Length: 88
Image (tube, rainbow, N blue to C red; front, side, top):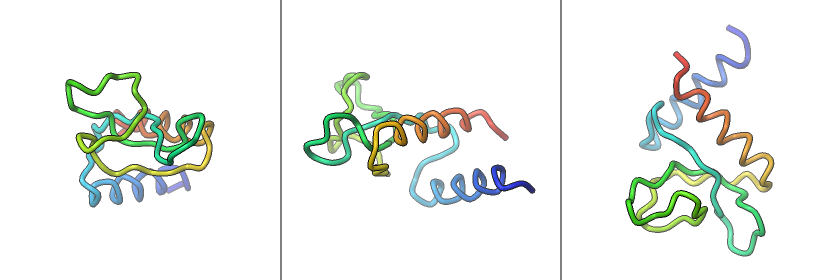
């Protein structure tokens, strides 16, 4: 098994222990106060009152929130996690 499939399997197992599933949709989010751009990732909030383009994290939002320290890294991680939603 190459490094990428092994890493995907490890992250899938980790996220399962944190209460998410492979079908979880991810978004970038403001995981730290004062950042100008969203530097974290979190599952898309299921609350109907949480607007889709609002990158804030509220009590209604699912865990985990993962800090990436940069917007480009957060956007990349969210894209990878979402691409893997359909991977076997």
